[in-house]
Amino acid sequence: QVQLVESGGGLVEAGGSLTLSCAASGSRFRFNAMGWYRQAPGKQRELVADITSGGSTKYADSVKGRFTISRDNAKNTVYLQMNSLKPEDTAVYYCNAELHVGVVVPYWGQGTRVTVSS
Image (cartoon, rainbow, N blue to C red; front, side):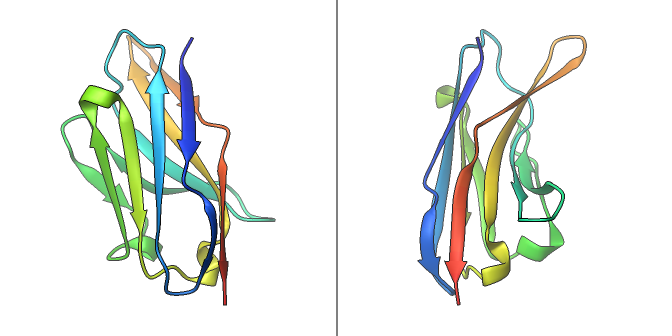
């Protein structure tokens, strides 16, 4: 059974940094895209950043230049380094991982809360 376990959320002051980690387990296959989404209160879940197994990355415009996504394929782990955090980054951050096995099968973590105080 595939599981995604997130860690690293918390409370930080504006301008501060946090690093989120997500370890995926339970698959015999390498995950294709892995990424981070976030959902703020009253808003839809949105893509923050994702990264393919080959290392290609994509970022939301709102985090470009501040956040960096990376992954360790050997550990099936994806990271999100978040710098220069702003109050509007406050949200629950969800890890996502996809397996391409004929069809695309998405998996989600339980979410980790990030709160940025002004």
